[in-house]
Length: 154
Image (spheres, rainbow, N blue to C red):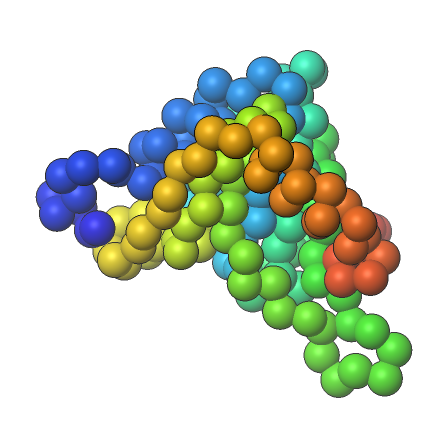
């Protein structure tokens, strides 16, 4: 819920809290990830922690995947790819954060200022190792098929 209407389960602050509490890994995905998002700062801080692995999946055409990769040089940033013969890349509309292979936040919210401040969004926080690891494994298995690392050509 926007601003003062969020009286329970504050999605934005919860996302930042689980990222701040991460000890091993963060795997997250957003359709649109913008510099004005609180996640921009949170993930940058997390990616500089030496003991933490950070992987970010983004859509190839929403926002600027190259800017995300440049902002998070110590993270692995992947974007949707365009398969041979296709006109445009796949669309990644998944929005989630998985922390330490245990905690999963599934959300309707993009990593953007408007999602965090003016949109009506909903999310659910789940503590379940099997779910968290299955999401991570599924996304990893799609490297080269649906997602590609953002390289120097971006």
